[in-house]
Every structure is written in C-alpha cells, then in structure tokens.
Image (cartoon, rainbow, N blue to C red; front, side):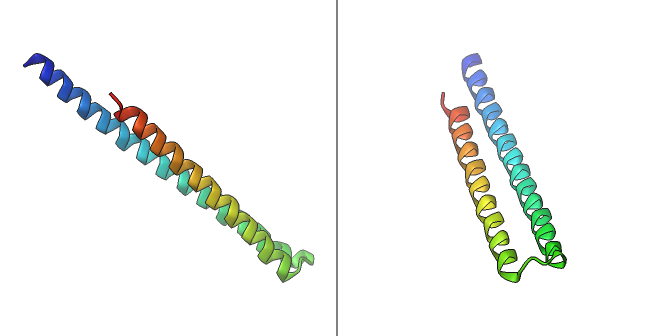
Length: 88
C-alpha cells in the first residue's frame, strides 16, 4: 500500500510538472507574439521615413515567418519535455 501511494504521488507530481511546462510554453508564445507586435509597429512607422508599402508588407511577412517558426519550436520543446516528464 505504501508503494502504491508513493507511485500515485509521483504520477500526480508529473502531471503538475507537465501543467507547469504548458504554462511556461504559453508565456513563451505570448512573448513571441508581443515581439511580433512591436516589430510590426516599428515597420509601419518606417513608412514616414520613405519606406515603400511593398517593403513594409515584405517586412511584416518576414516577421510573421519568424514568429511562426519560434512558436513551432516552443511547441516542439514543450512536447519533448512533456514526454520526458511522463516517461517512467
């Protein structure tokens, strides 16, 4: 009975750790999106410096590609960590 209780506690602890990993991953995704927002605002402000609309659209597209790749990386790292935690 003591061993079963300990195993149950460990399983609960692992679930808590996975939950924490997911929370941290979400914080990372939010941070990346905030950086995207700031970058896009700077790109739009560059119009007053003579940057063309096409260059602005290209810049925004490049920022979006970087954002997407960072979020995919965060998700992959989260999944790998979750698997690592849950592996007995």
